[in-house]
Image (cartoon, rainbow, N blue to C red; front, side, top):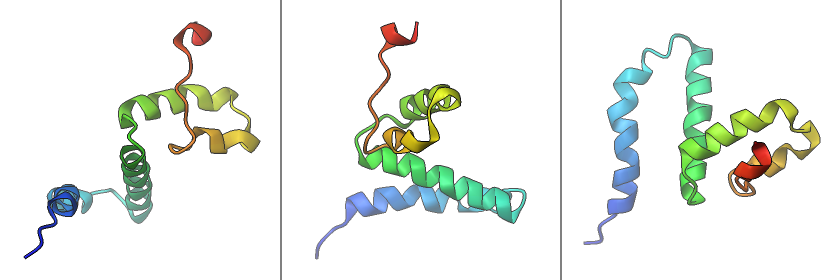
Length: 86
């Protein structure tokens, strides 16, 4: 009998959060939450610390050209040099 522990571990967050997601506030709030969860899961799948990625992207967004937004996606993202930011 094959085991699928990795898939079960990933689905645990869905099962535990389901009751809380009922109170997203609105349909639009639920869609936004789903988008954020998808981005965080994508960062994890690309071996990126989601908190570091989100913090860096939010800091860079105001000055980042829209035509280069693909550079900030988890599969293309490179952390900004701390010395460069200072």
